[in-house]
Image (cartoon, rainbow, N blue to C red; front, top):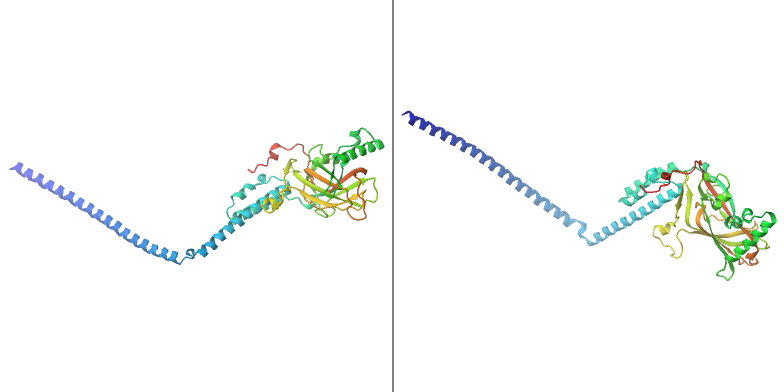
Length: 383
């Protein structure tokens, strides 16, 4: 009897356990149903929103002027014009930076301006920020006018260009003058060509260098290493006493009045920096740099002028064509035209010349001569 009662209790207990498990399963099923229902309801809501948004966007598209071909043409043209103007602005900004490098004979990267940054400019604001940074640096690099000295120099072709000094000739006095004149006239004959008008033209090239034993280092015997920003002045610029470049023909011939001459500076130019480094620059014409029209047979780095040369110190004029250009250049060319410059004047007999004087009005700042600069001060990498 007790065994049967125990079996019945176990059966009832198991039934209660099964019932509890079924209740748990029911609650899980209800939760799963609610979750599925919520997902379904959310999907329906999102679909309705997407449909409404799609209708709105389509309405915008239908009403958009982009559907009008003429509008697209105007829009695309405006974009192309903007890109063209930005490209031009980048190039001009690059030229401004290079000009600043030359203007102050300075290393812009060492002062926080990387010229390559202008290539990464994508908007007008980028270009403006570059120029503002450049302006900040150059304002600090500027040399005030009070620190600029104006000084005139005379270069003798016979003595400084050809090197026919008394010391070189080993003579003095009249004997040196006679030998110098003889060699100079021989050199004139070797460098005389026939011009377009059939008249003789004396044409020669020479180099001015900032290095030791260059022409100007022989003209300026003391303190030459203290010169920096050594440049040619104009007429009344940048100093009131500046008077450009000129030429004086010394000849035994009388009654010549004046002569037409031409001077050209080309090749690579050089400037000494405040630290004492010598930097080279190619001063190209802006029109050639920005892609403007430029004659293919004319070097873009050349600056040329023609003017009236004095004869025995009279009747000449000066030229301002080389204003702001360095005194030092790898290629100077001079042409002296023997033909009469106007009616009533005789032709010039080139073999009567005894010397040619090249007249330079220059400006320069002064620096402390502390010896050779450190190599790192002369590095110009755009880092």
